[in-house]
Length: 598
Image (cartoon, rainbow, N blue to C red):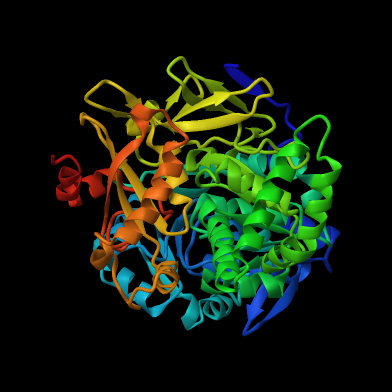
């Protein structure tokens, strides 16, 4: 199939904007809890009426400080209650929010604030404020810097004491559906980040249709979602706005190091995450079972869960024997795994990369269905996702209702719909290159099946052509190799080379457990282990698993273990953890050459 669409389930209000959501909630459901605010080790509930009041107060401070309609205000913070509060306050003051990753360098901050023409910047910490102050002399339009941890919300409250509710309501009503709501800068994998202008219409089309398509997961008064993704990323904004649109209870977590504790205390019914989160939960549970001498039981339970999920797609369903085994393991294993995820969640939505078919079946088999989706900043997050009632494991689902997915002759995925961005800020050339006849060219390669479910097969710009002329899409094999508990990252190489090779990094969280299990001295580094036969054998198992998914000509023949993980600080990944392939290839040119030495 070359093209597929679904009818819209939600009508975008022509004259409305996103501040309508919080005013509607306060008017129609004033006592419904819309957000949970972390206070020490406990959650404080904030009702719709209370949230609107706090948003208005912060908006008054922005208005009093000189923020005018259409002005850009940057927001640099981890995911926390204040992020959502200030996002809606900026809109209520008539402004446009410009997210900045809290891990950004001074140079990156300068580019985003300068390019967007931000008149104000709200930061989280003293370090963030220092980074902004260090470049402030190069930002003539930047008039204000507020710091959340230094009392920014209180300062705005004091500044706006003389601004009336009526003035805020007038400002809130100025933007219409086609007004810019935010400028979200892309990851910058191949160069300077580009500012994607996303309108209120784009978010209404995206979130309204997503909530309607997934309606059983968005029950007001019962459903809840825990947000631990960066709110600076468009996927995090999707969660925030969907929660307010439904509305359902939203919780924000800034630090995922204690994610299982946060899940246990908040107990969400829905989880939004990226594949690495679900991979770590699985790998951690398996490693714990092995350490407790229950590794064989866990593996049998996992195989049963996968078989059970696969059988759900068969016309006859799971047989009696499989159902009995599944019921036994549900009490022994699956229930405990669901408890790790908070105990109430039945579904998750995953984006940012492929989860993998085996892991997808595993999770559905334990009673926790991960609905994979696909999208870009330019498509206001998810442009396809699996429906809750008819998921196809291994695909990224059907188009967002009201939008169209088309596969071009060369296999590129093209998009059309109200959820698409308005263009790149201050960059008409890039906009014209990306858009053609109202179709957005994603740069991704994919296929549509007979039911309109999309499968992503790779990136056009990442296709490797070996010396033998074989075209290789790295994503397929990289994702399989990276699914191994020991592997943090994998980058396939081989352009104009005689065969395909790979650079591999080790997962620093899992490595200590591996050392203990194999009788190695604690604290050994990846560099010290690079030639260790036991380690090489285990990495080879991961590579063999990856090779099983591709042809012999596409398989990895040799690999090199690198001394450290790819990080944002090292310059090898973006804030959204996308690999900067050109940077990795340059920095590790010697290791790549070593793969091809006789």
